[in-house]
Image (cartoon, rainbow, N blue to C red; front, side, top):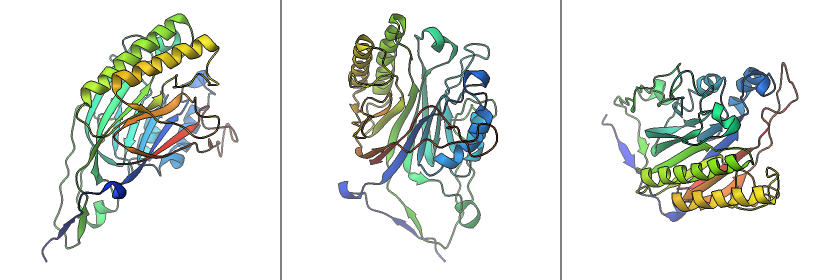
Length: 321
């Protein structure tokens, strides 16, 4: 029987696909730098994030391979930002991107200015171009398709960091297959300078310009762009993370610089008490449906049972593209 392919017409504004993007600062610092329970917490994290289409993790400095491996069957496309060399800084960026949708390109930048404690981490940004017409379906590997996929540019010693593409070979089938019209979206993950000293403010300002220009240069032709991360700043003066009025003004100023340089718009948060949250999103060319703050799960068994899996909230952005 002849193989049939049905192509869906390009979606109208009312028919845009909705995707969910999870942002989470996982607090996976090694040993005594967190709660000395990072391995156990990392092993429980996948069950709480698997339902989302795109996953942006911050502070996955240790045990990230546990999360990547656990989600390989649902989110086979992975990108990270590794250290430039093996001995310094002590830690990599802690950034991880996991996707159900095919990653076509990966772009990276490492911040040129970092101060105080951030000197020990290779902070920067990792950007991916995602093809929303190609969503991975695990059942197809055994029932309908012969697919070989490679995790994308992880920068982790356990994974291949030399390839920019994957192979995708289809076998003929009698089944009718639906293929969505092509649609790409650029997604950036970052973790920016922390702290409220003069030097840390200067570093955050410099990072805002660098990151904004990085996004503008790489995504100037993109119709849809999303930035998510622990920005350590926000658009309003009120935040539980700020030390005083001057600290707030400096952070809001840096946020404005990032917004101007990148050409992205702030995603307004309507959840009470979260308007000034530093874990946040900026976008362009997407329709924001909702910003949600799921409750932080707790450790279910073993050491640390009953304690929270992270000291930061999860943030979920739902958009139509």
